[in-house]
Length: 134
Image 1 (cartoon, rainbow, N blue to C red):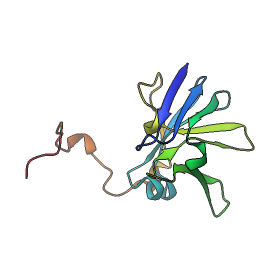
Image 2: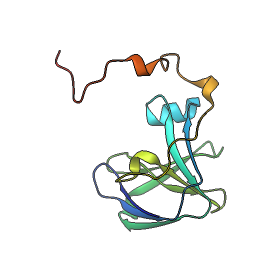
Image 3: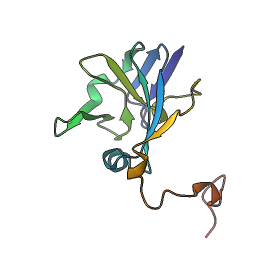
């Protein structure tokens, strides 16, 4: 498979060639903090290859307290971007950075016991196609 991806502002673009072995939704406090959301949605591959098409110099990688919680992002818009971890053995790709459809669905919620207290019964929350009228 081949996937194209980018940041929000379009300054950084990339291509992933290969397959993802795992797709996890992580509810740990660090992932919630760095996404500002209920969970991170990351794709993992030990075989796929990342190729930067543009803007690699506009990326920064942050390793929280050198503990292995790693996030790469665009210096211009802050969008999450792919990074390579575990001494080059693991490619981690934020699912939302992919431009297009994926051929894999989330396989598990991880660190589920750490989920936010408001992250319950979300399927019952009203759904709108755009910002609701107030």
